[in-house]
Length: 325
Image (cartoon, rainbow, N blue to C red; front, side, top):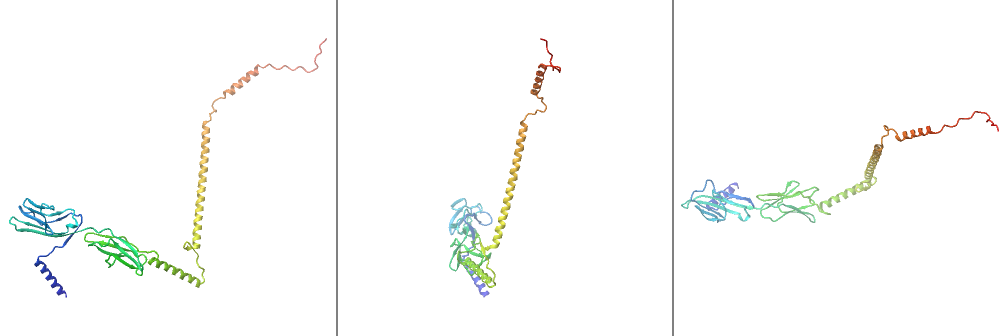
């Protein structure tokens, strides 16, 4: 088998070279790039005849110093320059140099393939009866390959739409898709497909209900009281949490009230001290000045006492003398 394959490949190569239909491999370029197709080593001979063709149509021709066709620019060494290349410029480019006698002295050929970078992909989830369809959007783009990854592992699926059944899906499974071509590659973020009331979420709810029913049956069999729930948790634990939280809030409230009262008393005492200090500073100082009005009054009183008449002398004891008639 290996011998047959080798012979087939050898005959194919002989046929290609004999027919002269050998095509160079495609060189992929992105839209908007600047592409330079080299003519070859060495410069152009004097009075040479240079031609460039794109898909067998002349885009440049120069004989000596005379230009016949100049649709595309050419460098001083004869290299063809493609500025801001577009998809319509995809194709085969051939450059040829002839001497004055019309003999071919140099030739080059390149196949240029121009592609646009792949767009930013997204994963769209559509819930179906038995699972979910994941679509890598946008779809139907030419020359773009699609690949899928599940939980970081590459999948063999290369279609744009990936169908996942709920029986194959586990909780926490994440999917992402990648779009790629010869010049760019872009991937989406991880997506977890979940559909309301169906699929994995429904299976999980059913599993929880089954576990709850099983635990209830077990408690009944063993004579254990049924647990009472509050907001989905054990009622006693919720009461303990609520009482502890209320106690903490009450303690914080008391601390705040005490702090406010202490600050209010301190401010009141400070305001009283400041008022007393201002009152004392406004009163005059009488410690060093004599009381002038008081001294004048005492002196006037002394003067008035010295000017008063003396009281009459008392008479001697005994009966009064009888005057003769």
